[in-house]
Length: 475
Image: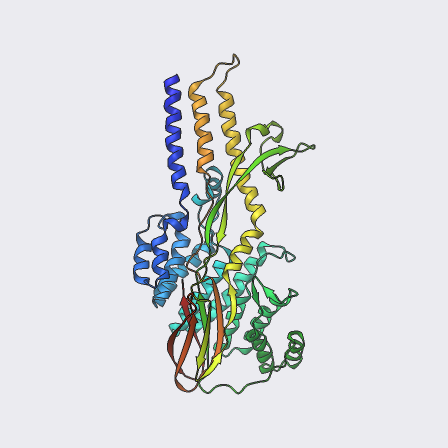
């Protein structure tokens, strides 16, 4: 019996060590060659690395694979292929990625083994890239369909939360984009509605900011301009008073306008932080988790008989929780010049801020799920170890060894979900650039980390219409 027990303990230790070594590597660590090539602008090699990476090829990571594949194809100007993957990602989301079996995986193993369901802001970004792809393919009709789907996405998000809930349930940038898409199709009425809806999201906050982004002056002018174009004089006056600006209509440029998006830096990386909790019972008999400092009290969501739970069996639990780590962009600023006229860029979407704040908003709920999952493991482990002793006080070495194995597994298998769509930019800025008829040479002057300027020139043919261009500096 002693030999059996020794073998079980050794096997448990080996398995535990393997789990620990696997657990040390985050999602980012295991797919780093892909991200390095994206950052360096080697998009073809990045696509090769993505296709041969065994982790992202797993069925549970299919949504991530499709989003990354769509993104790298877009960066490589393969717009049809890009939308093929984004459409498949959309289809997955519409079908739903939650099931009883998938939830059970999260309880018995860890959330990294569940299907990746996407962050809320990532779902909006799919529409952004799909719309651009359609525009670059001169498919305005499908770009407008994508604009309408932004509203459906917003409604779906809103249904998840109470209207009074201040959590992220809409996206001001997506509504701005929606207005721009309608405007490109000469639908000024729907453009006004979209711009107004975007502005109202900012105006709900006293400082007129939304997740790290102050309401752009360009959006304020777009609301007033489209209100005037629709003949909504009272609405135009009202928004002038609300914004505190006097809008002066400008003569439309002969060559139309270019909406220029600058996608700078890379989204934050998810890492893992370890916290330690114990289970306590209050005077009413209710069970709560408390951290080492005693500053947190989180209810225990348990379907079994709480009165039979021994709190001593759930002590010193290590909780692996996801944490975002920001990546400092290489470029700190940019200036756009066209025909010797400088056009300022305004921040439109701060993905860094969205990532940090939305994770923070769901922290207690997520932590409750993780702690409850770990406690169930602990209770099972304690039950096995208790069963190892019979009424005469003798120990069954085999059962005791299984108990120790469960203990080691519970400790070392715990792993945070460190997955996210990491080739999204850190933030997106934009500018409306008036164009002359014919060829326009637009210069982008970038301020790099060494404090020196780098310039890039793009050529745009002014055709009298509203056009779009997105430029990425993903490092």
